[in-house]
Every structure is written in structure tokens, then in C-alpha cells.
Length: 527
Ligand code: FRU
Image 1: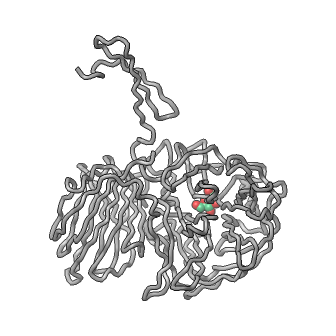
Image 2 (image 1 turned 135 degrees about the vertical axis):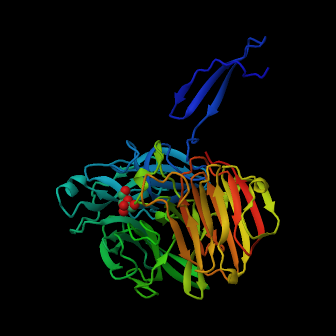
Image 3 (image 1 turned 45 degrees about the horizontal axis):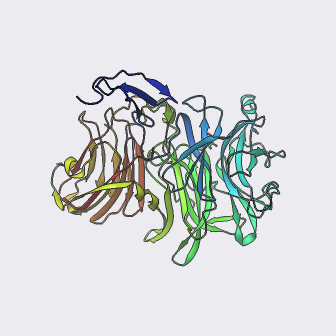
């Protein structure tokens, strides 16, 4: 008789999701009163397993990412009282490996100056603020105050920039008594400060969004700021308001170029929110764009990577520029069919630059740290694709997170789509592939499961891409998302989905195409 055949179940709901099942063994051994812990923590339907998400309630933009003393901090726009957007706080988590996250108490709460909107954090190594102690530089958060009373009263000046500091590795915070450090000059959308130390001119630089452009300010001490320049009116796309900018330099072919990231509330390449970037130069005062004003470059033309920015203070010997985005889109973020929590972040990615025939382009790759999650590897032999081939059994595809690295060759004359399909027994599917006729990469989630929550969700999304007979796709498949890195990060598309049963089948599809190599890693859950 199996040990738990006769159980007296007492179910206790602990912290939402942990069920303690107390089982009495009815066999002769009356000493054993086994307590079996069955964890349902992070096991809800559609809960991603290798991505950061809050335990409960609403989350949007990543904020204040900074590295300090072995910890990667991730703060985020958080409303602890509801699963839809509301008075914003900064939620907080830390990681030692960019993969596993520890939830910490809320870092910043709304105060008399307003809700705590998006922003950044830095380590003030030289104690320019004077908030630090000897041997203990302060961690400074720089964020937007959004004064709801002001907005409701019809005023234009309800967004200002404020700062707060922590002397205990971000665990507790003190807001600066001189806030706001940048008052509002009468511009409604005036937010999302990203701050960095500009070594060449030894000063702090703040870039933030201001309606249809970004503002660049300078400061010696993070408290007193002067406007240096602005950028963006008549540059790039203006389908929506500009938000969440970032500015940093990256090496390319022995030179250094500056990259400006700007998120766009509406008008993204496949509808709704999207993130652009500009390549150019920055002299501590002014950003100049290398490309024509009408050039629009998208960081991730998938529909679900928004408001992303990069980590501050990554040690020089590491040298990476690490990015994370919010894996959702404002056109449906508040109604996606998860209820205990809403939304997740992308995987952290390393950004770099590459010289291409079309000019310098931003390359996104998953951080290598994620390889710690790899468990079993399954390999698929070379196979010609002339119709659909089910590779579920060979790849061990089972509805749990997987990393797929597939290399294809195709006959451009055939002009037939090819790629991979995630699907389930209900006929729901996500198709990921390449259309050689139009030279487009695509993600088709028109029949991916739940979609009635928004008319804007079930879309066929695409991006121009020249593959020239060969295509490598590196895909992270989680329970409710895919991130597809094409040809080593030349293109990345991030998309979410909500199948009624997790996708536990995998197929190849196409005509006159060939899979030359296929590796599939099972990935362990981070929760
Ligand atoms: C971007 C954004 C930011 C703002 C925050 C408010 O998603 O609109 O501009 O600071 O969200 O939660």
C-alpha cells in the first residue's frame, strides 16, 4: 500500500500559495505523522518559471537597476493593493546571479509629493551628495514624483524629479528634504530620470522624457541640476509620448558610440508600446544622432518589451551593459488573464554594437548567466522540412521552460515560410518563423489561446530581416512567453501568450527548408 494512500488532508493556505498536507500513515507504524510540503508557490496557470514576476499584484516598468556589493538590484513600478495600475511604489528584489531573485520589502512609498514613478539608481562613490558615511557610499534613487491631486486639478506641473538615499544596500530609504530636485516648468509629461556619472566631464548626467523629446541635465551633486540640452523633437518616431530613456556608450570596431534608448507609449512597430534607439555621440552636453532624423531603429520589434533600461555600476572588469524590460504592452497590460499577479520582466540581456551594411546596430543577447538553468540537452539530427514534423518526443518538449537553439537553411527561391510551432492538444499555437518572400521574421499568436480580453492581443507580428539562406534562432520558451534571438541577437522579438493548456508540443514547419542543427535544453525553474 503506498504510503499516502489514506490521508487525512488538512489544507492550510500560507502566503497565498503554499499548501501543507498533513498525512497520517495508517499502517502499523503509528509513530509517523508525516508532514508533506506541497508547494504551489509560483505554480499558477500562466506563471512564468524563468522570469522575474512579483509574488502578487500589479507590476510595470523595471526601475533603479544598480549593482552593488555582489547584488543586482531590481526595483519596479508596483501597486501592492491591486492587480491593475494605481498609486505607484517601488517594489524591490535582488539577485546574485541575474537569474534567481529574492523579493525584498517595498523600497519607496508615495508621499506628499506624489506617487513614485519610474527612475534609476546609482552608487555615489565620491559622496557628492554628502549622504554617505566614510567607507559607505550612498545608493541614490532618482525618480519622478507624480502628484495625482495636481493632475486631477487640471494642472500641467504635477510631475517633478526627486531623490532618496540608502546606506544599507537599498534595504531602507530616506527621501531628500530638498525634493523636488527638478521642479516642473509646466510640461505634463516630464518623467523617468536615468542618471549616470560622465567620466569625461566629471559630472552627473540625467536624461529624462519630456513629452515629445528627452531633456539632458547636468549636476555636480545630484541635488542641483541645470539643463544642458534636449533631443528628439522631429527625430525618430512620435506615435506616442516618449518615456523611460537611457543613454550609455558601447565599443564598436575600436571606437566608442553612444546609444540612446527611448520608449514610446503608442506607435510601436507592431502596435502599442515599443522601444527605439538612436546611435550617435554625446559630449557631456549634447547628443548628436548619426542617422537621419526620420530613421527609426527598434530595440525589440516584438510586442512585449517595454520601458527597458540598463543596469548602473556594473564593475569595469565585467564591463557588460545589461538591459531588462517589462514584458507587456500598455494596450492590454491591465487586462491580461492573470489575477494574483500581473506581468513579468524580460530575461536580462547584454547589449552590444555591430557594424552592418546598413550602419551600426544594437545587438541583444541573453546574459550568459542563464546557462546555469540548463539541465537535460536533447539534440535533433539534420532533417529536411517539407511539411510539418512533430519533434515533441525527440526534444522532450513538455510545457516546462526550454531553450531552443535551431539552425536552418532554406531555399530563398521556394518563398515558403518555415520555422517552429509551439502547440497543445486544443489546437492552440504560436508560430515563430521566417517568410523569405517578404524577408520578414514573424511571431504569429493569432490562435495562441485566451485572447478575448483585448481586441489588440491576437496578432501576427513581424520585423524586416535579411537572412540570406541561413537562419539561427535562439528561443527561450517559458510558460507564457517567448524571447527569440535571431542570428546571434541581430533581431530579438519578445511576445507573451496565454494558452488554455501549456504548450507541450513542438513542431517544425516549412517547405524546401532544412534544420541543420537543433539543441533543446530543459531549464530549471528559478522559483
Ligand atoms: C512607462 C510609464 C512611465 C511612468 C510609469 C508609471 O510604462 O508610463 O513613463 O513613469 O510607467 O507607472
